[in-house]
Image (tube, rainbow, N blue to C red; front, side, top):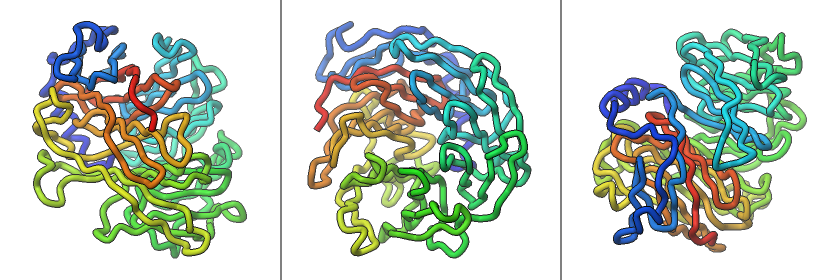
Length: 391
């Protein structure tokens, strides 16, 4: 999410106020039986192959993103971060919640389970380094001024950080981080929002065009290997290349801001699939399909209106993904969309969870082959069970 929408989230959170239940459990699709293919849970609607098992509340308007390392979940917000033991995925146990003050923001959580980075772009412009040796008592051990890019991601198991504005941070001494320079000098990508390391030193960027880079020889002067360019130069929010960059397809999410209706021309973002088959020869990627958001009546899985627009946000492919398969997409007021990608790169929606009016799904993470956690800006996180097709 881009920074100018903090106010919108706060307004939306205030609007919903006490509308949403904060109960810890919610009925699934069997209670009551689905009606017209739609299940009504304690705090949302879903297709009849998606079950809302449980809801874990946060402070209204704070939950931002998460990362799963082993059987631990790291959830960040604008006021704190929390660590959960999710050995039993349906019953997460909170180990700790650590206040951090207002640091905007840490949507794409950067951690290797031993340390955690918090990139404070506003108001302090600093990178904060937390030691996670004791999950019950995390400690901030280093602060790097001037390195508060909008997002910062780990490279080489968090030995280095790459920021969305280009800042390269040396984190080999976590108590004394230092800036090494810029990684994006002379590269074609613009409006960089995030980077993802698909294999050690091999990075794909959420930018326009998006770029595939080799930083194995130099973290400050990476080699440009390939690009993917949208003709309309749309904003790219997030990007994944499954199976450590060996898959046939790249998954790309777009984002629009502050557009309440999807039916206005050019105001609906898209979730996209790109073919990587010939990148070594052509040094380019080719788009194969896109999913476009539309409005509805909530009970049909689509919101009538939305403060944050018609966008995908953070997403994750299913554990069985191989040259296509299933992906869960956090989509703001459009909830969580479950999409399949065929061997030819064509998409089909196969399931959905739509939070009650006021919900804003930021991200979706597969915990097991049938359980998904979805992070919601205004509510907390939902535990969903998916019973639909994988292809």
